[in-house]
Image 1 (tube, one colour):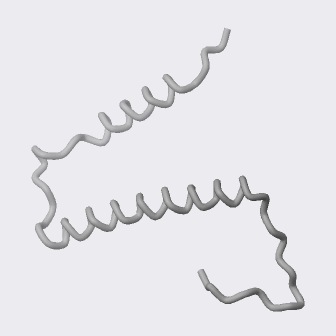
Image 2: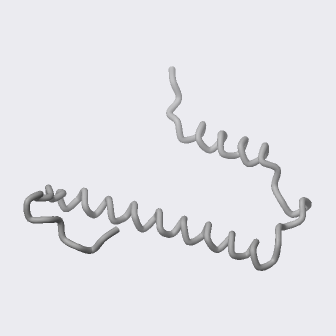
Length: 77
């Protein structure tokens, strides 16, 4: 994103301090995830793909993720 101020004829609406802090926190989390993803891609580029035996099947990953989501969802009576 650009660090340049907006043109004078189009004033920008300022966020509430709490909203701005939340947005900065979200940006930091997104940047951290992107850095982790980039590190994985760089490792693959440098060392090649991992062996199949060292990988977790996507079905297991999916089921674990669905179980996490289900545990976070409140029970419906």
